[in-house]
Length: 220
Image 1 (cartoon, rainbow, N blue to C red):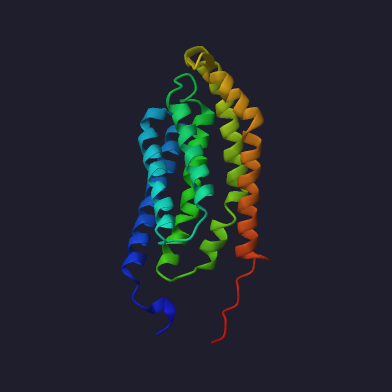
Image 2: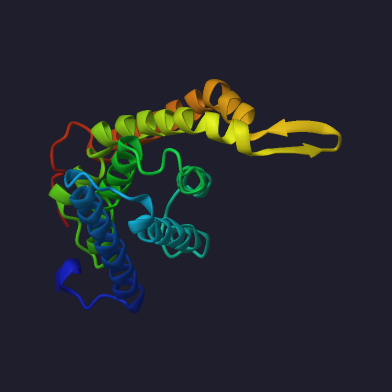
């Protein structure tokens, strides 16, 4: 029996179901956010629960890697998940900017990334490596990552004045201001994280797609 026609293992069925769930969640998020945005009445609170749910569920991806159910780069995954969750938290707690156009657009970009990768993972778990899905998985980031990173920078910059006025504390006698910390992060740290993520994905794309042609099947 050809390998891709054999009965999939229970773990494969579970992974496919999980990937299908994540795909549906993010497609609904894209559709709902785009609908509100195009109608001119986007409200963050109308879609934020779905955005947080999809992001928190991605922690399951890390667990899959840790227990050996899937392969992946755990540190890189944690950076991406933590970064996205932090961005959502910043917007959620900033009433001055969370209903803005950049906030709506970043949700759309975030949500578009996932239906481009979870279907590939899901079918792969069942033993099917479908080239169009693989190509989409390792090519969609080319426009989406730069767009997402740019929108993250814009949203952080727009939120700085609000956090500068409202989030201040003292730690061990040192005054801390959230707006100042966010500004420092945006200027001194964010560019390096953005570069790391982009080059990481480019390296993965080159490894998987090579010359952008389907790999020939190996002869038995």
